[in-house]
Length: 157
Image (cartoon, rainbow, N blue to C red; front, top):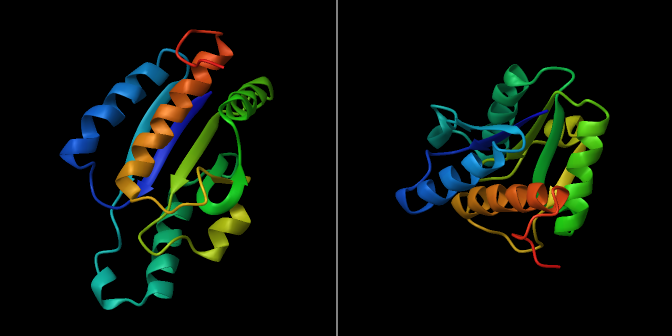
């Protein structure tokens, strides 16, 4: 199973880059994992929020394959414990999911069409975090889930 971490926005800031890279390397010991940073629409400054979200959604749809399992991150989504996330990853591996994509939407959120396409809408928290921090938290939690699956010491429960 390949884990793809997609985020709409700028490249990782220097203060986030090292942590994201470290956790992504760690995840790669368990599953193939890679980041795709998707630039906002070139004309985003001239678009309103709704049009920006629609343009971002079009880009995402052009990159998605029909059999990709899409996990959309949104504060209104389903919350999971670290153990539940580990179980979710194991279930996807068990059913031979080829690609699982974790998508962090743009600055204005995500278009409704992507919510409809998503196989799961997941909330890291009801709090709203800066997108850069979400990247780091997502990478760390996926690594934590991997260590739970292997019963390793990183996660203390």
